[in-house]
Every structure is written in C-alpha cells, then in structure tokens.
Figure 1 (cartoon, rainbow, N blue to C red):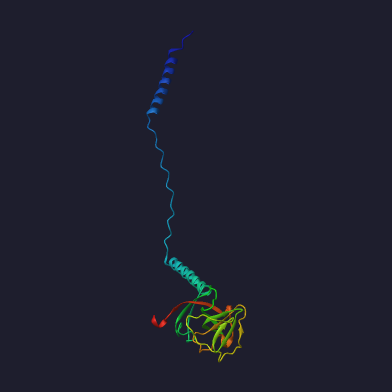
Figure 2: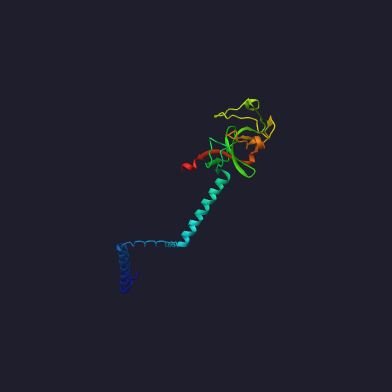
Amino acid sequence: MSELPTDVNAEASGTVKEEATAESVAEIKPEQKPEPAAKPKTKKRKKKTSLDYAIEFGIKIAVTAAAIWVLCAFVVGIHVNHGNSSYPMLKDGDLVITYRLGKMLEGEEICYRQNGQKRFGRIVARGGDVVDITESGITVNGYGISEEVVYQTSPAGSKITYPYTVPANSVFVLNDFRQDLTDSRSFGAVSLDDCEGGVVMVLRRRGI
C-alpha cells in the first residue's frame, strides 16, 4: 500500500488536535445561568381626586337612603301618637314603631288609618267573628274576651248595631281608653289594608 504524504498526515493530525482542544474548552467552560424573567409591569393606581371621593360618598348615601326607604315602606313603620285614645299604653306624643309583616292577632295594639288619619287601637275580633257589647261587657262569638287590663265597656254611644259580624279581611278595634268612642263602635271594622302593623316599641319622647 502506498503511504499518505507527510503534509497530509500532519494536516489531519492538526485538525484532530484542534477538535480535541475545542471539546476540552467546551467541557471546562462554565455553565451559563438563565437570564431572570422580566418582571411584569404593574399599572400605577390612579390617584383619587376629591371629585372621586365625593361621588363614592354620594353613592353610599343614596344606597343607605334607599335601604331605609324600603325598610320603612314595607317592614316597619314609625309614627307619633296624638291623643290618649290608647292610654295608658300609649301617651300623647309617644314615638311608636310598628311591624308591618306580622299577623294581626286578637289583643294586639295596632296602628291603622281612618279617614286619612293614623290612629291606634286594640284588636278584639277578626273577620267572621261576632261581637256583642252589652251593659255586662264585651263578648266575641258568645265568649268573654281576655284582656291584661279590664277596660269597662258600654254600648252607649255606639253607632253600629249589635251583635255585629266582622267582615272578612277586617278587624274590630277598640280604644284602650273606652270612653273615647272613636273606634269600631263608631265606624265599624277596619280593613286589613288600612292596618299599619302591630306595635313593637314605644319611645317616651318626653323622656329622651
């Protein structure tokens, strides 16, 4: 076999040495650390102006007012008692709070509307009951009524005829101060639609 020329062997040997040197350098070259990820840019919060604060305050006031209106229109009622028709429970000038969603029950003190005025009285009978008032007192469906305080009641001055049958969806209301005849003895039963709710709290305004 013929031998390769000397310069070709030298050239090949040099190439191999260069590759080996390159591999050695690559092996000892320190690993490059990955570049840290760029932090996301955060939007700067817009500084609130006095107008922004005023708008927020106005919205809060409007929401609060709307909530109070709904509460007073459909849940509770706030009234001022004028007169002493419900004395001694209610006195003239008392601030009275009623609950509209409760069921109208016998013996309960309620607020109701009559001829455009708000009045207070106690339920003694409901729709379908038969009320009779004699010199001996009050009976409902032939039985005497139970009252925490016995109020002397007479038929004198009544403008309705007894026995009286309370119409459906109505209540028969009497004043606690029975000498005051401005109750169902004068104008008959009160429609449930005219009832403002049962009394749940009384505030003596003169004591505040």
